[in-house]
Length: 294
Image (cartoon, rainbow, N blue to C red; front, side, top):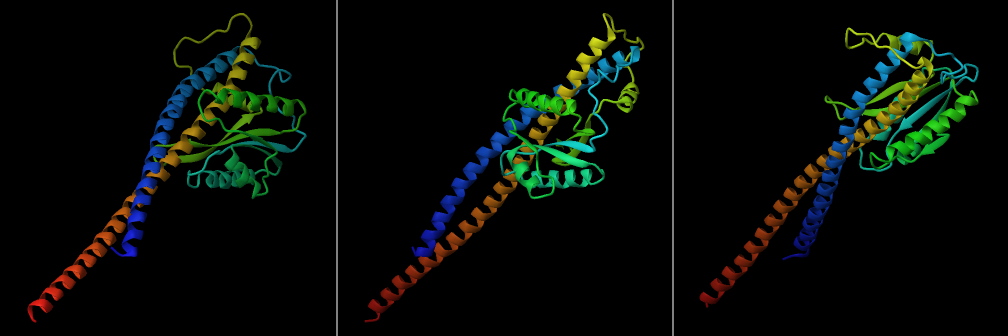
């Protein structure tokens, strides 16, 4: 066999090893998607329950502005919490989010204070005018999300007390059925009169109207804390589900490309091998004819 055939054999072996790695990462991504999607489904029910609890509390009494986690309106700064990824092989996951955040914040005249969740999104945002002021590490499991949410809530409370933000928005990718994911934005704060009016429009699921006992205000404050917690938790879980869905799609494309490359390499190898065999047979036949003619 020629040196070219040997080189082709090495390339075929390397492609096989790469395909094995891609299949492993594909299986890991598929496994991760399941746990995050299940968490999102569970959170949807819990989020709905928290909303109904808020509806019941607000119908019995208004929460004073002193108790509501609202923002002062004289700072002229908008807080933006942006969820991205900590790992690669996710296609344009972070680029799509940065473009969406840039376009969304451009609609506001106020200055933006960006908090990035994930190392990859941090570097992408640094390349724009939206340089992150605070960076958080993205969790790699469901159990670690609670710690991250706690850190964000503590930082939010400190900035709220200092009156540094006018509003706070959440930006993250959400899994969809029609596409792998889509970027979404949710206003997290302030919990002002407009927010309360929108909340009261939610229809109570039964004909029996609820009643809050033992004090409306403590109950409402408890539901508000849960509302902020579950909003951040769900945003993180949806972002992680979208990230793994994007990684799975990238691995599927890589696997398809590797299969096509292997087929091409194998065809070239077999064609070259057949050519070498034909040359050897031709040499044997030529030698035999030379011997028989003498």
